[in-house]
Length: 500
Image 1 (cartoon, rainbow, N blue to C red):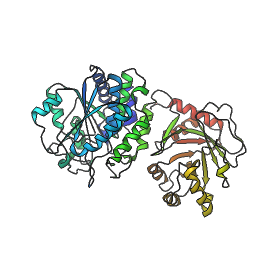
Image 2: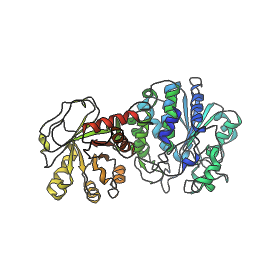
Image 3: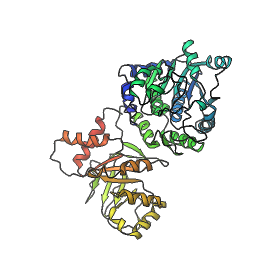
Image 4: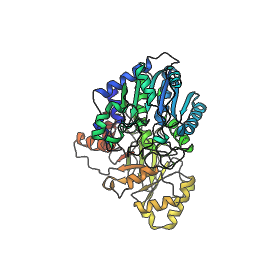
């Protein structure tokens, strides 16, 4: 199970090179040992989470978003599994963001988390350090700056951020000297505790010779994004505790609200520098889908999360109906029913089914059947300014609006003018459509791929392999097919997914 958990979070989505730091034997054993140690603590024990990376230039506060959600996911798991008392240790510069998040968490979740903030560039007085650390039974660092061999703290780009950083490495040093176990979670090699892989960092990570953290740890979890490492630890706690992940893994709605709270308090994306719900350059939806995947270990994952600020859980598979809707063996599936042409028939309401209608002519939105969840507009509508204007008005208060193979430049212009788009449907032949995929991801617009072929002459195993490849693409929110046999292949592919 530890291998499956780590497979979800170690694909190096950001291209930083962490694959060179991984160890197929060490990493699963470290995750299991860390979680086992945490679950052996007596109820009510105190655990410290060291986090907060003050790296955003020309921003007050300089706090980045990564690490916050992961820290709270761990805190939630420790509280749910063992009723442990969690303390967050961070810099003065990050304190306002974490206090806002702690207040939000206490109000929404009823969990108390204690905050300790320290000034930058000032050694923690030994009596203060001892008084704090000797009460802790475990120390966890997640997305926390780690001093390099020269004693300075660096970003991945080797920018010195020491003037903003409190030297919390001293807490890990104290823990090592007093046999207090430590766990470190990081994604770049410059985080506290990643001295465990310092030599590999120096060789394989850009700027590694400068930024490699010196302080080691007892147990190490490497992730593509540090938040994901926090989600992985929470998932492993649920598994080792033999508890339902629903009890221990926080629902995506909790994390989405927490990140919005952090952003409102001043946190920014550490790569883009924007005050929005992005983590390490990726929309929050990307991270929440990893959490969603971790929550479905060992069972088919029928849905994905789509959107940024108004997250929706929609099916991953569907069928395009060009003529009559045939709804027999498919009735029990969580799926998209996509009808092209005028509404001449409707399916009966079914839990988990999203009914999408692609119109040739503009419908009367006031008389649109309530069963239609999404109205799709073909690119031919772009030729009429009046149709686009009506569509823009309808997107404010009507059903969800989708578009079909619209050119990116026009899509960008109309979204800027107020058109609210929920889903972009593109044909498989247009997946490299001038950057439309990346732009839609940044905007929180779902991406549905219409595979499009009706050929059923291929061997079933070949069909399933091809369709499974589409399902596995990290940016694809749903795969649509035309033939019922292909829909059956998609269902089988969902059941056969090897990882989360």
